[in-house]
Length: 170
Image (cartoon, rainbow, N blue to C red):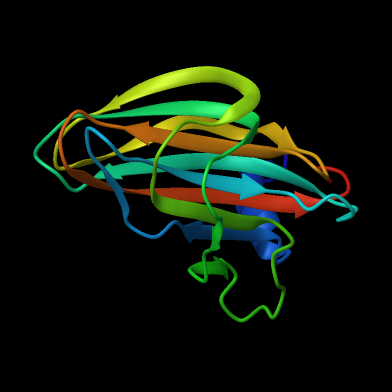
């Protein structure tokens, strides 16, 4: 009997081979007792693709605790800044992401609308996976996912998003 080997490939690897896997970071987010910050992955309204989120990573560069609310479909305060730190993960690919990372490093007030679906306490001087979602979180056209950060003292953080884009999963 001739047995042929099989190999399991996780979906983000498969999507990367197609040039559809992207990653990017917000700028440095500066919070304090009077200032908040946020980073958001947005799928433009008429994009015609879905963003399948692989994971989020949250980094706290400070020696103080930072609180991160994970919120979907919210309107954040302040003026959004478009991150230029986004890249396709198949390095020889010329694909450009449809999804956009927006952030604001220091705002007063809170977000409006949306739904908080989780909260994380970011330990000092650590990077943590926020939620390992492996494509189960689907950001459809016109929707978004955001981390809204608060702290009691001055702190600096950064948020990383990884996602793949497709009209369908396969």
